[in-house]
Amino acid sequence: MNAQTSTDMLLRSLCLTTMVHQYETLADRAESDGWSFEEYLRNLCEAELCERQTRRVKRRLKQAGLPDGKTLATLDQKVLPAKVRRQIPRLLDGAFVDKAENVLAFGLPGTGKTHLLSAIAHELVVNHDCRVLFTTTFHLVQQMLMAKRDLELEKLFRKLDRFDVVLLDDIGYVQQDREEMEVLFTFLSERYERRSLMISSNLVFSEWDKIFKNPMTTAAAIDRLVHHCTILELDNQSYRAKQARSRQKTANKAS
Image 1: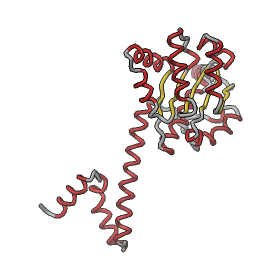
Image 2: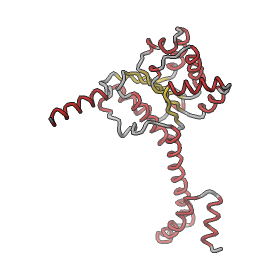
Image 3: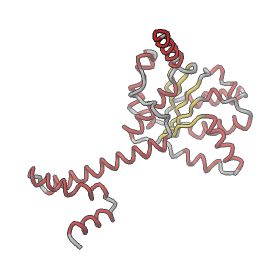
Image 4: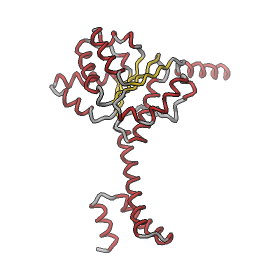
């Protein structure tokens, strides 16, 4: 066994796969640039850590299940209300996650609630190493109902608890019956002051009795969510309506 093969095997046994591919190239650079042994070792370790971070981000983005294309780069912030634009930088720094605070986005359909929250969540994964899960309210409620039926609701809650942020989309579209309302309320209570929630809703709080039915439960759910939260009010024009009008104008010009 030659020295190169032996070195490769040692690095692979330590799961230092990036070093396997980089150590010779960096050794050549170290020799040409006059690096010390310490500088060579530091650069080799930095290459390994950088690649590991890249792979971790990719894994966490895949695990998050965020909607394709809904990132900060594709978000047209100019059409958002001025107050919301001022709130975005504070959310992007990730401090609300450390404090287990919530973010609630309200607005009519098409105003960009999902895109905005998804874009913030994407940045949390990439820049702050957060574990995020995107799910529609309907899908999560159905998961919880099946888990409750199988006596595994606590197990599901422990699984969800691994995520720093759960992005619960379209809570206003779910018209729960009593059992659905109970598991959703239980989930919100489980996260309270422990983990962050990001929620989009087309219903303002005064209409949340349509979701939770019972006035006491509605009040309790709202109280837990708003105790530590940032509220984003998107009263801007619908993206989809604007795009439809733009397409129509283009078609009219073409004809």
